[in-house]
Image 1: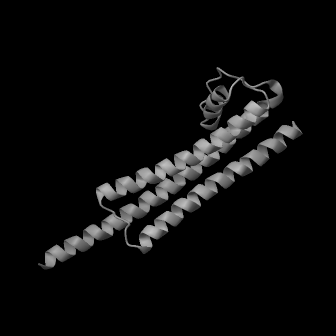
Image 2 (image 1 turned 30 degrees about the vertical axis):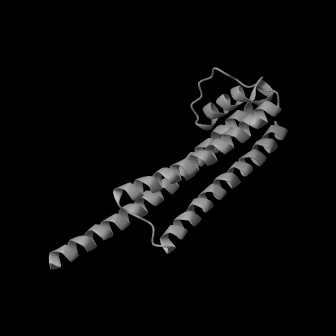
Image 3 (image 1 turned 90 degrees about the horizontal axis):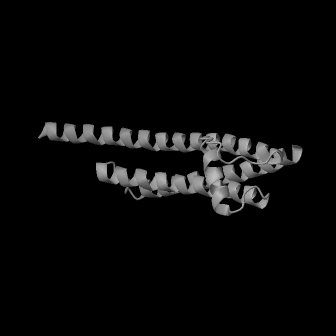
Length: 153
């Protein structure tokens, strides 16, 4: 149990690092767009920006799921990486079908992955909310400025 706990915490730390790097890269890209004044709050630009951010975050989450799947496969829990990846997706999202169950000796790892998934989905949601809020504030300011400009004409 102690060994699984240690392995799980190390894996969770690696996953937190992956997510932190993905968020940092996305923030860097947003700042670069801001500096170049390319951050577009029009519908098409905002939609593309949100899509790019969601895809980046999804890739980060899929990398973490793959890391857990690799761990499960390495421990001999599943006959193929494909099955381990499926099980990992079910754990990470806390879906918990129960159609594939890990051996008693490694079940703690599955629970730790579920905890990891909850944390990562929270970080993903928080980041998306922050970006969306920022875009909405920009859009409101832009619309008000346009309205005031048109009212003066």
